[in-house]
Length: 344
Image 1 (cartoon, rainbow, N blue to C red):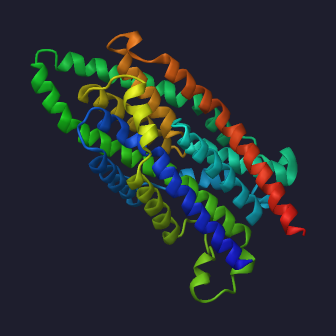
Image 2: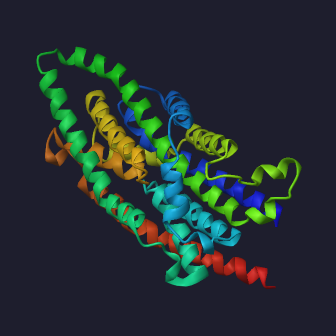
Image 3: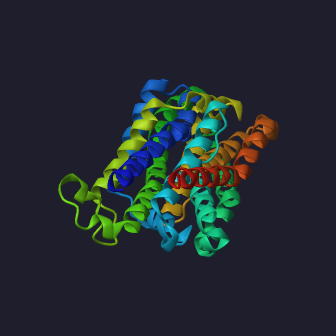
């Protein structure tokens, strides 16, 4: 059983890796779309700032996932593994079709679906964190859209007397900083979700791990905090995933929603980064995908409303709506399959 737990921890880091390449578009799509950096340089830039969040972000989002989605007393290794499988499968499906869905909501949906499969609807801890999670499916893209729109208008007003060529050169440099800020915000919010899942797993088998010695003793959680190895593992995995990139989704986010320029790319990234950072500060697990997509739409709409390809945007929104139930369904099936195999 101890090796089974260790294998699930490894799978959790695999999910974090997939999260990184699936969500790399969040951090690099605008900077690649505006041709400020090459794709290779952009993913290296984003991966570095993903990892820097390990030293500055807190643990509130991780604790929200650990305690605020399903009841801790029904968490078992099979529940955690099923939740991860639901999230991984849905992420791979949306990555294959180039749909920028939310890895965060896939994980939350998968975890919830596995819990319901194990203990019925009583497994769900209906309360503040669910209210925040569900409401921010709508709120985060709207906040991103409004922030991107306002920042874009502010930039227009401040730089209206400057020659277009000088404005373009200025924002090619400024976009490096806005992209770094967004990558840091992405790492801070998304890596914590996997940390919460892992610690929830380790707490559920705490008595079994107490007497372990050697390497496996590190799986034992002695206090309420997140072990350092879990933090470093999660941030390393999401950073490595970002290095591999998700080029289909980068294309959708960087060019298909709207045509971006360095100035609008800066506004979109800055608006999304501010919104995500505020949510992380208050321990709210939000979707970086939702937020940056909304911010890109807001920045693009300042040129003219028709500059945004609303047909593509509508397709993305539908992916947002079905992510939680779809990943929950896959997780519930995974739980049934695991328990069936266990009983053979």
